[in-house]
Image (tube, rainbow, N blue to C red; front, side):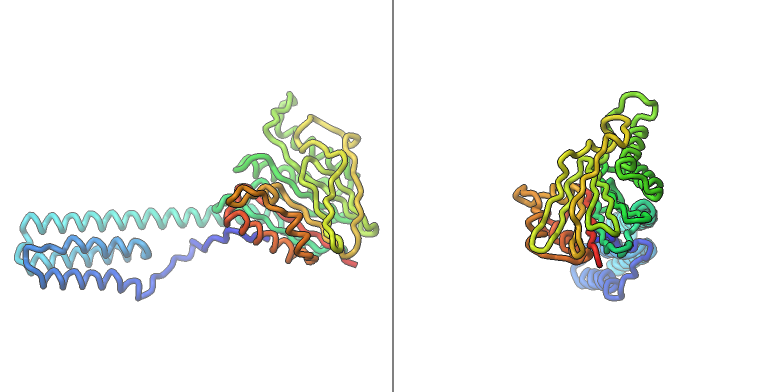
Amino acid sequence: MRLQHHPPDLGRRWNPSSALIAVPLGLIVLIVVVDLLTAPNIHLGPLLVVAPAITAAFGGPLLTAAIGALAVGAQVAIGVFHGGLFTANHQAQIAALLVISLFLVGFRYVHERHERQLGQARLVADVAQKVLLRPLPPRIGPLRLAAVYVAAEEEAQIGGDLYAAVRTPDGTRVMIGDVRGKGLPAVGDAALLLGAYRAAAHRNPPLPRLVAHLQNTIYSDADPNGDVATGESFVTAAVLDIPDTEPVIHLISCGHPPPLLLREEEVVVLTVSDPALPLGVGGGLTESDYTAETFPYGIGELLLLYTDGVIEARDSQGSFYPLVERVAAWHERDPQRLVKRVHDDLLAHAGGSLGDDVALVAIARCP
């Protein structure tokens, strides 16, 4: 699930209430009445421009044009009442009000067209995210899962963080990763890695062979000519094999932050003794270059995977987010509640905005 930055439905235009429409109408009436009651040498007609200006803040181009026309008509009425309609002063005021009203109508038209285009772009991005970063099912075999993805950029729906879970004949394989960089290149690398992972993991190769395949995929894409790798594209990743019938985890970490295992009253950091290089770094490799490490993972225990956007988030004093300490203090054992709690606490720690994408995956082993 995605918990941050739920933009409004821009395809649905907001219809202003009658109370809001009454504000510019009331101002037109008030300005006209006061102008007519004051001395002829006091000109309040130029203040009528406030009516279409306020309308442009909440109404569409048609409503803004209607209020602008009323304001111009009111300016003409003031000129007729004072008997100076054809004077240079009144004509200049009417012309200025007409030009400003037309400008406001054009501004509202361009703004609404931009909103429609932005709404379509957000819709496409949302669909792309669901295709690229498929929602994890709440249950896979004996595992319960929950995930959160948070884009650092408020207008973005997708980024360089990724996760995926694949069911195998004898267990479940889970991957979490973080692509170097941001923007479309990071999204492209994430799509490449997820496609390679889903295609290969279903064939159930040994875990080292799977990771070698992912490494060579990223490396070959970064250097399509077979020359020396540029080093510009790489992905930190943790790939896990969770058997159904064994209370263990097989883990290969490619430069990724270590998972956390919530066990009774303690939090265990699953640090591998010999982590591999990030995917895409080091050239073409084989399965002999990777070794999976095994950690206990029993019934009732909760596994938390995360990207470095979590532990590198800073507060106003520059302090990093203390993930291990917070998780240890909560004693949370439900995957959904855990990722929601970390998400909310992380945003509070960072002051409501993040400097990097964030992905969280919580996995609980059930009987």
